[in-house]
Amino acid sequence: MDCCAAASLDGPVKELDEHAMTYDVICRWIRKILERWEKLFPELIPIISRTKMLLPSMHLHAHKELCQLVYALCYADGFADSYGEGVETPWHELNQAGIITREMTKGGRIDWLNSVFIDWNWMKFLGMRT
Image 1 (cartoon, rainbow, N blue to C red):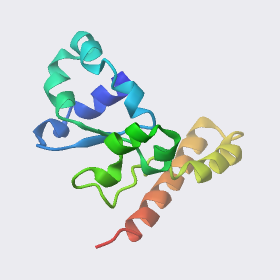
Image 2: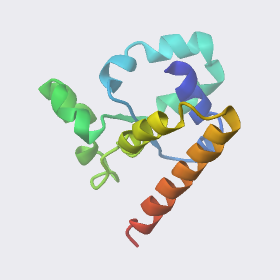
Image 3: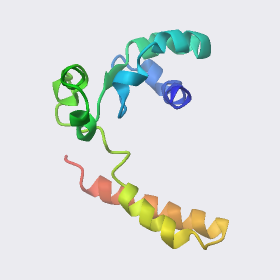
Image 4: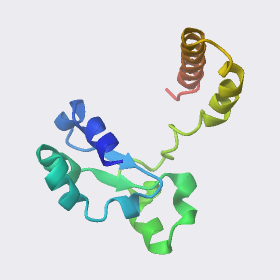
């Protein structure tokens, strides 16, 4: 997870004054994060230090009450209407796509999955509030 988070923070996020990260087990992952990152990604310490660490809403009730209070999206400034699960919502349909595409050639599978992602993103775009 450290490498994925570092890759996401090593870019335009550096220019933002405020940003946040949600993760299903954020309360465990952030333990000793500065010690780990001091060794692995010392140049990103200032960024990870100012990153708001939050729990996605659907995973909130699986945590202790203290974690729910400290890391809840609904209590964080600027995130009250977010639920932090946008990345996980397409899995139901993508699992079905895996069944359909498993017998395809690599190129056919990539093309078909790209179409599925494009459709998913378009439908998400149409459902966005203005």
